Image (cartoon, helix red, strand yellow):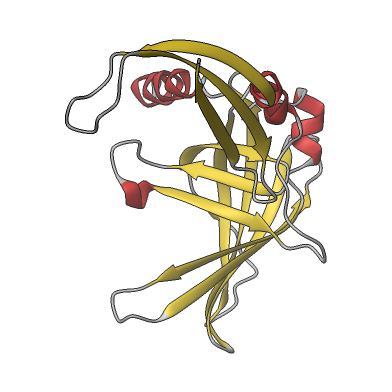
Length: 210
């Protein structure tokens, strides 16, 4: 158990270099409840839609999630999990499952004791969970089900604000015999803007000095 906890904390340390600024612990807990959705393709090529509806438990760090797996309109599986959440650092949370019970295909009113853990992080309307850092299949990205557009936190955008605007500079162009370009000092004006899809767009305008 101690070795498992140590491995989880070591994995969490690897994530602290990310640029996403963390919310306060209480605020992070408030982002957990809601309905989340994830689409995956199984080995038969079917699109399986997973949804999980999370509600607050009896304690601030306790939650209950109802997970439903559907293929089209057919519900393949459904079950509930009681879990606790513990902040690991300023970015990451530790999910610890305590009890589980099936609903579909056969409902049981009895909860069975379980114990599994994973690291997760909520970025506003996106729920990132990681079970294995070494495998792509060990990671999942859930999207909050909303009537509007799913968004991320505003804080990461602060990091790119210094990159936006108009910048001027110059460089020495050594020329090229192949292209008939002579030696010259070139001035460059770059305008960097943010596109509607949150991509940085730079339009350089080089000019040779006369």
